[in-house]
Image 1 (tube, helix red, strand yellow):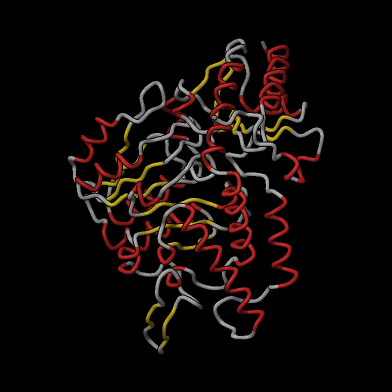
Image 2 (cartoon, one colour; image 1 turned 120 degrees about the horizontal axis):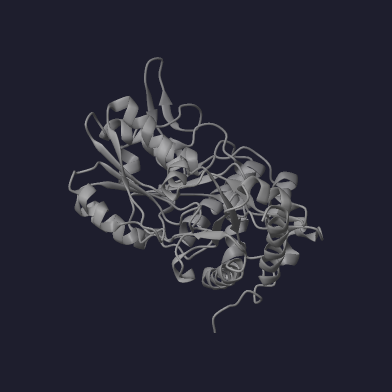
Length: 405
């Protein structure tokens, strides 16, 4: 039996949601944290805190075991190799790691980097910086009016022999779930390396990194019910082994002489300095918590919510809904515009009823230009939301219409 919006009774596991005035619809920006994550980080800090990988005393061993267990759990959860799983401070840093440590050695003057019109700035600006440095250019896969990638245009760009194809798994604005396994296969056939930005996908849908087959897959803990300060890069081990370090310092070395150094094995080669240890423990707890629910149930729950939201939001006068019309083709995000109110005004007025939504360009200005708007209002759902939260949003939007309509 498919899960519906009321089958995941987990709201009580989020301490911040004990506030009666809070309808949190901004999980696409950062998720709230369940008690299991908060308690795991607190327990580590109180009882097991030490630097990892360096000490042999029991406390340091306990810290290292918990840190590496989090890496192994995250890798196994997404069917990715643990030794190819690198911890960074966020998804943006993970993409920058690839841009510098792989890109500077493999992308040159006149080369092409393919991205899409729906990318988050993290998956655009990093490549712009690389292209400027080496003399390469960016080419964009367009979207159609339903918010889907035009894959025939991707094929035309692949004929140019790009060095890299970078694509979001799930759009943070449109909610579009892209066929990333198919895109990766087409890109690989054309000789391109691939990077998938999974920041929105990992908390929302079942993800199998091995089946997708991308050379690099990135995500971040804080959107997946874990803490801020920790991103994850899953890379093909043979590629990571061939790459130069991104950052230099302690822990990432095998030996240091006066003029030269040699590097530690992966993933340590890319984890210079003291690691975000408590954050990794918290991320591991978040993964275990999601596994306890089951990602198929998470997906069914949020798909039901989005379907209900699309239906209810259509009642609002003067609204334009962006993204695929079929909720089966989109993640837990709904972006919209009202033809009589700026998104910032919308966000401020609905907040008077405790409804938290995001307004702005959502770090996707090329996409905003494609949509022909300066900004949108975005409601993004999570496991703790239910249909009453959608109803609260709709009621608050009627307030907006009364003020501006």
